[in-house]
Image: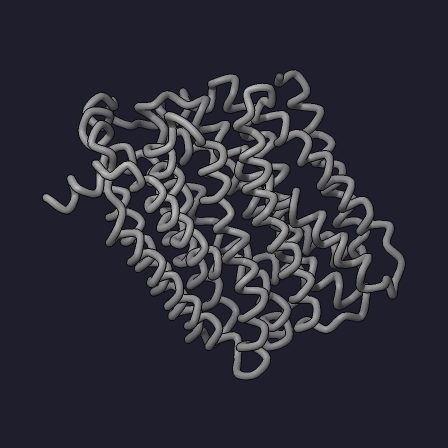
Amino acid sequence: MQLTESLRSNPGYRWIVLVVATIAQAAASFVMQGLGVLAGFLQQDLLLNGFQVGLLMAASTAAPILALPIVGDLLDRRSERMIVGTGAAILAVGLILSALGPNFAWLLASLFVVGCGYSTTQPGGSKSVTAWFRGGHLGFAMGIRQAGLPLGGAVAAAVLPIIASMWSWRLALVVGAAVALGGAFGFSALYRTPTATADEVRQNRPPVSPASFLTMLRYPWMRDVTLSGTTLVGAQYAILTYFMLFLRDAQSIQLVDGAWLMFAAQSCGIGGRIILAAWSDRPATPRFRLVVASMLAVAAGMLVLALLPSQVPWPVLILIAAWLGFFGLGWYGPWVAFVADASPPESLGLALGTAMAVNQVAIVAAPPLLGLLHDLTGGYIAVWGCMVVLLAVGVWGTRSVK
């Protein structure tokens, strides 16, 4: 108890919270982003088509559609430490089962378990950072914390293809389980809830019900959040799932080499999440305006991919990867900070969980549908072109937001 009170009273403790929340996010993202990096190896070993590759990615992201609102409500009532730690344990079990999988069906079921565990990481970390930084520097802090996702993805892009090529993708999944558990253990050991938040807010929250979710979805700001979020996250997972396969099939770049371009994208995504979120803290810059700018920038990048000739020089590909990474991954920092600003304080967890659950629909749908589009057309022009159209619809639908 004395340790807890000492930590809470330390003026610099909120920066410790930010560090451990970022590490926990990076560790979990090492797994989830790593699945996209390993897609080519899974495809080769299990003889999968584009639609089946997309289904594997969707399996790991389907569970959070239902789990995220529930997790969000639990975060308004229970300790973030307990919820994030339990989720990491479930995630690790799912990865071990995936590594033992003898066939495609087993892998689908196991990756669904992985998604159940991952459901706690995003809203849990976002709520913990918001609780400590809502009084100031929220955008900057949220951007650093959300940079954990591309940070984990960058490390995964650098490490997992080497493990998969030298040994197997199964061993790569076991390594991912160990990393996820380590990140969650550090968060659970060091995180403490602010004193003002620990009891008062949770006592003021009415019991959650299906009507609570519907009420949350009816907020005008939630419409803009969900429309922008679903289009951008769909584009994000199109990049994570198919960019390396596009490089292999359209540019004749081997998977291990293409992973370094993915590493460049993820690395620029780290900078994007921090820079865009910090920029959104400026009084003269509405946070949502940067989200819309990101939609336009990602659409432009994907249009370039659709029109790209074969045998493009590496410097050009690096620039494209950097652009897509900066905006295609960087948008999430100001987006989450906007949700935190707009939501009622007593329902912050529910608001984050609801918004992320709606995003999850796009995360689940995008990989298999884009994979099917690839299989039907025999290339990636339609894939990137489809995302350009969807992003344009997102910009048009949120045009009234100031």
